[in-house]
Length: 201
Image (cartoon, rainbow, N blue to C red):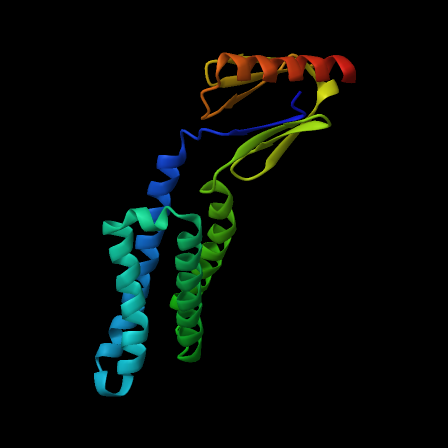
C-alpha cells in the first residue's frame, strides 16, 4: 500500500504570469537602453560603457519579444532578472554620482523590485505539487505552501482531475492536478485518504 502520493498541479493562471513576466523584462530592458544611450554622445570616451549596457539590454529585449520560451524556464528567467537588477543598480549609482536624484531613485526602486521578482517568480513559474503523506498534506501555492493535517479533514473527493478537501469547518480546498489517474490509481489514492482520515480522527 502507498504511504505517499505526489500530484503535479495545474495552474490556469500560468499564461497570465508569463505575459506579466515578459512585460517586466521589456520594461527593464527599455529603461536600461534609456540609461545607455547618453553614452553615445562621447562614443570615443564611453564606448565600453555604451556596449556594456546596450548589448545586454538589447539581448533581453529581443529574447523577451522573440524568444519568450527561453524566459519561461525558471533558471533562465532568474539569470535575466539578476542581470537586469545589477545594471539598474549601476545606473542608480551613476545618477547619484552626477547628482541626478530623481533618475537615481527611479532606477533604485525598479532594481529592488526586480530583485523581489527573482524570489516571487522562482515560486510562481516553477512546477508546483500537492503531496499527501501519512502525517499531513502540503499544497504548493504561488507565494506560499499550504499545509493540512488529516484530523482537520472530513473527506477527500476525487473527480476527474480535481481533488476536493472537505475541511472540518465546512470549508473546501480544491486542487486541480495534471495527472490522469487510472481507475486503480484513483482507488488506491482514495483508500489511502479515507484510511488515514479514519486513523487520525
